Length: 341
Ligand code: NAD
Ligand code: DAU
Image (cartoon, rainbow, N blue to C red):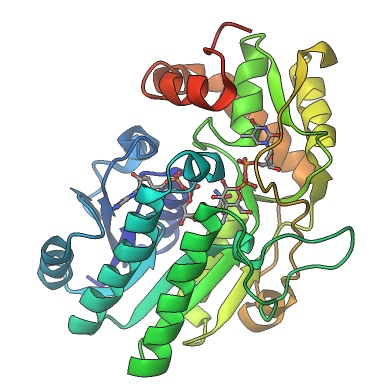
């Protein structure tokens, strides 16, 4: 059976992507290579763990001999690389795992994929590689790279390594760049699940700066459909932007969440700004629309309500995460222990 390797498949987007592929492509098997860092959670894939088309391997994308052996053993035809350190705030506290996984790990995958003649490699990247926008305009695929955090710099470096392999070796690489995802199974360090979880616990919602920074929000299912389209129909060496056409300031989003959860605005706490905080992201995804036949289908209002309902129904999943290593990070990031608010 044709087999796809997905890296980082126990994280937020990777786990949603594997579920989508197994549901929609009955003739395809998936090998999930995931190191299970703090963000990797096998519970995210519990419902498909016994599927005979799903194989899990705990390991590091930077481990060349492991990657080589998996590619040969499972005759991998294509790789989708989600594996990454993904949180901007953590990259500002300690950039070393970002350099190791996002840059070194991606190069190891490229080298191993070339050696095994893998037919397609999709690098899952981010709109953050383009830097920050003022109040107008949108990122296109030809916007110059100008990353502003260690996280986005490491993702831009990975994109450039893929680009160089395409240019020098005819490597079958495709790059996707997406805006802010939300949806089920998102680790509660990111804005939407953090604020939902804190509000449910009657804890303060720490809004950075004045809350006027703007993000474009896309439901994770729309992003996953875009990646599947790029895997199937994307041209080698090309970049495809995905976005949700749903720009919103952080403070407006915070108020919207409090409304959905029936919690008071007195829970909002303005805290010191993120260093180097990008002001605004907006995505022009007309290339993906015209060349891949893709467009976002889930409106932000609908997607946010469904996401809030999922977190309300899965408080045990959140609580298991918030009881572990997460408490140390929270104290370091926000200067107070979770539960002290
Ligand atoms: P996540 O932090 O939820 O998951 C990352 C996964 O990668 C985890 O399962 C982790 O265990 C695994 N991993 C980390 N280091 C690894 C290593 N060395 N080897 C193997 N596995 C490793 O991240 P996410 O939000 O699901 O993001 C997935 C990808 O999508 C990332 O590459 C990210 O840059 C990109 N992306 C994310 C967003 C977003 O809004 N979350 C938007 C655009 C692009
Ligand atoms: O744009 C795509 C990127 O979106 C992805 O590449 C990243 O992996 C993903 O983490 C996300 O990055 P952001 O930094 O935009 O997401 P985050 O959820 O951390 O923050 C969203 C906005 O909310 C941002 O302006 C910072 C702000 N924020 C965030 C947190 C965690 C707060 O005001 N308070 C907070 O506590």
